[in-house]
Length: 96
Image (cartoon, rainbow, N blue to C red; front, side, top):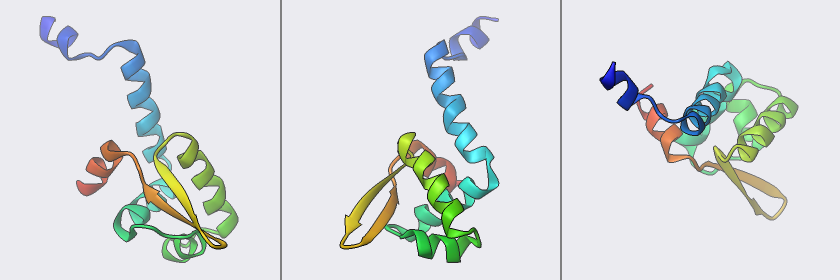
């Protein structure tokens, strides 16, 4: 019982971990995260082509991934490029 209690994070940390794993639970978001992780800076159109997901769906998923801090975006002219920002997610993706 003591080992279980010591290993269990506090409620806030548990909530944060749950949110991070929820991002990975959706097949589309997972595909996007894997593509971003391995491609480096990549735009919506290239992500759509790489994953077979429609541009609009990619954009909607990226909006959520940006808000949660999983990815970040930089603008180069008229193109927005996305990179993986969360090192914990990168570590998980390295193992899949």
